[in-house]
Image (cartoon, rainbow, N blue to C red; front, side, top):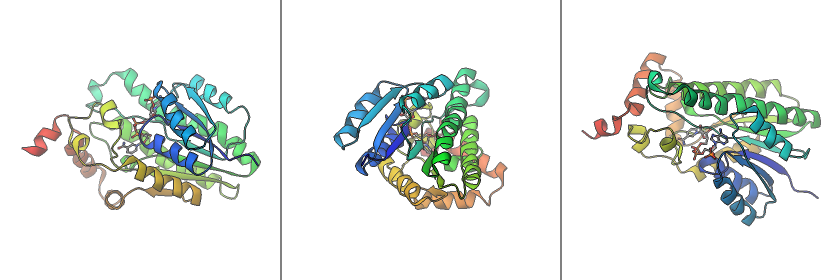
Length: 262
Ligand SMILES: NC(=O)c1ccc[n+]([C@@H]2O[C@H](COP(=O)([O-])OP(=O)(O)OC[C@H]3O[C@@H](n4cnc5c(N)ncnc54)[C@H](OP(=O)(O)O)[C@@H]3O)[C@@H](O)[C@H]2O)c1
């Protein structure tokens, strides 16, 4: 009997690394992708956990990169797609470089939906499959000083629920993992280490991944990891957007870490 097969994007670090490790531990073979060479070391860890691993190094912000990943699946049936690759971008919108803005949108939105469509079609024709999208509780909150990123996560959260409803009764489940601030490379890469949220206490990526993996296996619609984040997202749903945008300023404004200490 061949083992089940999972594709995990953004598997070189953070939440995706832990998601892929869980897949390996739970008996999946893997196709993993990230943009930088660190993905090869991560693949060795997954092999050590018993998985047969194929690695793709590609920029998933591009349709060419996603095509490269999909070609590497070599027609094998995909039992689980964990579309997790993504990154943020801090600081004031008008001061950001448009190429960086575009890369956030193309990774978090365009590349993600393209991959989900390619894989989702094959799952629908087989009448089975599990899709896990890494959204965020940031999708509920206008992201002052992280405006584009939060917008992309609002897209992912919304898209995930809509696709889940479209695929009802097809045997394909769609689950949205919505983490809060998590201890990964995310804040360094987004240039947010001088912010209150960047320096604040965060969740462990292994715990977040476990919550997402279990929700995907159960076929749940969404899961917010951690009780504090559950509370924060429940409150966000009842709070006017303008108030949320001001609250986000206090967490994400450049220099807010120092301000919070004084
Ligand atoms: N950390 C948080 O607080 C938090 C909270 C909520 C949601 N999230 C979401 O969780 C997901 C994982 O982030 P993380 O926190 O684990 O951050 P991370 O440690 O920086 O990991 C991000 C992963 O995504 C990959 N990636 C990013 N852009 C890519 C691209 N264009 N092409 C290919 N791979 C790409 C990275 O690989 P390379 O380094 O090779 O680019 C890395 O493997 C993201 O979707 C993020 O939005 C994070």
